[in-house]
Amino acid sequence: MNRKNIGELLLEYKLITEKDLQEGLEYQKKKKIRLGEALVELGKITDDDIEYVLSKQLSLPFVILNEKELDVQYIKTFPSELLIKNNFIPLYETETEIKIVTDDPFREELISELKRYTNKEISISVANGKKIKEILNKIFDSKSEILLHLKTLITKLNDTFFYRIDFLKNNNKISIFIYGCGIQKKYDEFSFQGDLVDEVNNSFFELGYSTIYNYLENNNKQLLSVYPISTENVSDSYETNQILVVSKFGLVLKDLSIIYKSNIFDKKNNLLKSDTIIPGYTHYCLNEVPNITNISLITTPDFINFENEFYFDGFIPEKCQCNGNGCEKCNNLGYNSFHLSTFINKKELIKLMDEKNGKN
Ligand SMILES: [Zn+2]
Image (cartoon, rainbow, N blue to C red; front, side, top):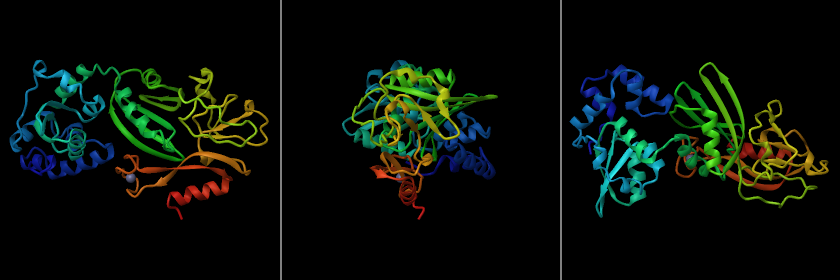
């Protein structure tokens, strides 16, 4: 395959100027989208321009997708998230090769992910991106794109220090951020129409999580911060007179009364006060607390406001060798998570967190 990228091709065909390209690259970086998309969003080119250039320049066949000719059963053997996220359709495969159609043949990460997944050579043809999206939506009846994104995300977050998922809706676009221990990381962005709070909560329920959430609205912007609580893995292993911290996602509240209470989040102290243990969240239980009905629940280790030694069981951030850019080792999250299970005091914990973050 020709190694030129879409930017160079568009320049060659004089569809954009060098200045357009620079603008496109900056916009792409900022929005974390593909260069082609960036240039379309900036109004420099149209979808048709991209397809024209790709089919002309590359020796890749341009396919007019006809839904009736697609092998839906075959397509469904692939994970829907993989197809929808990357916007491609597998057409057929032989013993050694798999034929796919995409609107962007330059995505090496997609190609290598596919190679890993199928163990076959990938042969590419190009088609209209909107048409691909439309067909995938029809095949997977993906009423909720949020659900698809969350499904992958929530598994990734399970054994990490990230405990909150933020959804920022701006007009018809959703950005997903993950948050934990003072670190916020952009995870994904896609277009979305629908009711943010409803769809997000329904998606979590479908995946087996209850939610505590905080919701803010301002002009066209909506911000939904969700603390997922697993409804599985109930544990009775804590002792009420022991100082105890349990990490998020692991355990569950026994009565679900806390669901939909968005106002229990105490902004000042970043404390979630609860008369029920909400296992699944980092928990601090002090010796002075005589029984579990008085437990304070803290969502983040950076807001510990007491000096006594306590038992901590949770994850703290650890700097990854990729310096936050994302790599295979950190599951593209930019950080690794260090599991800590020990008696510790605030000073020591902060020192340890700094060490792990390379702040020493
Ligand atoms: Zn990494």
